[in-house]
Amino acid sequence: MKRTKVAELLQGNALGQDVLIKGWVRTKRGNKFVNFIAVNDGSTIHTVQVVADVQQFNEESLKDITTGACVAVTGMLVESQGKGQSVEIQAKTIEVLGLADVETYPLQKKGHSLEFLREIAHLRPRTNTFGAVFRIRHAMSYAVHKYFNDKGFYYVQTPIITGSDAEGAGQMFRVTTLDVANPPKTETGAVDFSQDFFGKTTNLTVSGQLEGEVAAMALGEIYTFGPTFRAENSNTTRHLAEFWMIEPEMAFYDLNDNMDLAEEFLKYLVMYALNNCKDDLQFLNDMYDKELLTRLNFVVTNSFERLEYTQAVEILKSAKQKFEFPVEWGTDLQSEHERYLVEKHFKKPVILTNYPKHIKAFYMKQNEDGKTVRAMDVLFPGIGEIIGGSQREENYEKLAARIKEMGIHEEELWWYLELRKFGTAPHAGFGLGFERLILFITGMGNIRDVIPFPRFPKSAEF
Ligand code: ATP
Ligand code: MG
Ligand code: MG
Ligand code: MG
Image 1 (cartoon, protein in one colour):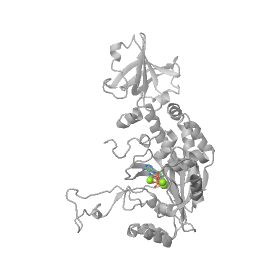
Image 2: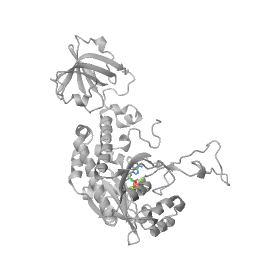
Image 3: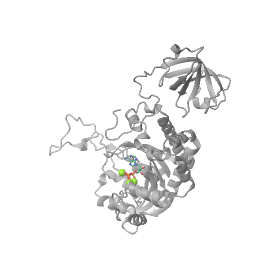
Image 4: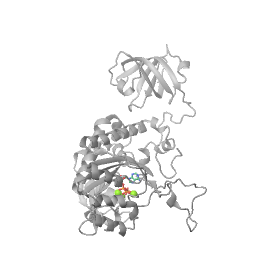
């Protein structure tokens, strides 16, 4: 017999038929006449109830069916008299595929804190919470590809090992082929890191943007979706050392087109989750955050507020709230400022534009005022910055001068500059942090809980 997944089973189409399920026991309870075993197989937040009659299954034969054990059950699918479920399985055979010792299996019936579960990243997908989060994460990956494919964007894979530092922030992990026990030395005796990668300096990518621009300047509209790495020794609930980014890059887009795309894209993703992850979202809403569904519905039905950085600074300076870091024109906004604008002032998502150029990366298009660049950050409730983007500087001289001015190694970016030398075009793009999106959609409070294997300072060893 072929296995039926619990999600499909619960639709009830196989009523009256014999079925086979395989999954992990969540609970077993019983009385003199009958035992009820709840089994989950990861296909849904729900369990299916297996009814084991004591006539057929005596206590001894059920002793290995404990929380966490893996089982294969055959039996007839029948209507259920129990509350909260429409169907159940009248067990005919129960095979234990894998034992889970009651004394040592950590995920017993009682609820566990998210902190505790973080310590056991290898087992936490078996909980309702992480099952829901990872199913939603899957659905969102699919929705990203679907959105762009339907719009005619091409998916481009950019390198993980690169020589360029897209953000110029120096938060790179080095990649090295050096013999660390016996490294090459410079004349001063220091380790010669310029020899890192068979004679070149290399690092793990902090963003696929620059290579994405290469593709956009030939294919028109493209996106990347891959892992990025930042060696930030940060312990916030919004930063990881390894995270996934979605970076669309579009020829012939200006900043307004870029904002329109970002807003449409985010709304599409939230809508997709509302339509396709109903049970998981309902569970997270009821379990952790009673406002979750309201917030998601709000985002898809209201337009985002758009304003300039300069106006935002005025608002923040006249705010009654005391900030840990006071704001002046020219300061980079912290998440406390971003969240004030979104949650307290406008009470909706905000897109901030035209930031001071000295707090933004070298590649952003400079405005006429000589002080600001055509940057945009999208700010979300509970998150702060979810997207960072800009119109790119397409003028060769201006870009070259900016690179020089910022002291960036020109020789590493010759290919990037050549995009402006030969057939340059106005273009724009942005980066959406995938885990920040999942944070928003699931309502989870910590970014470490929305990626299967979080990487952060002192993270688990596997
Ligand atoms: P922040 O100000 O929050 O540190 P950033 O401005 O450094 O973010 P960008 O370089 O603009 O980030 O990257 C684009 C997007 O990638 C951000 O808007 C955010 O969604 C996401 N992101 C950036 N850094 C991280 C990180 N360390 N962990 C997870 N997501 C991140
Ligand atoms: Mg940062
Ligand atoms: Mg930022
Ligand atoms: Mg940013």
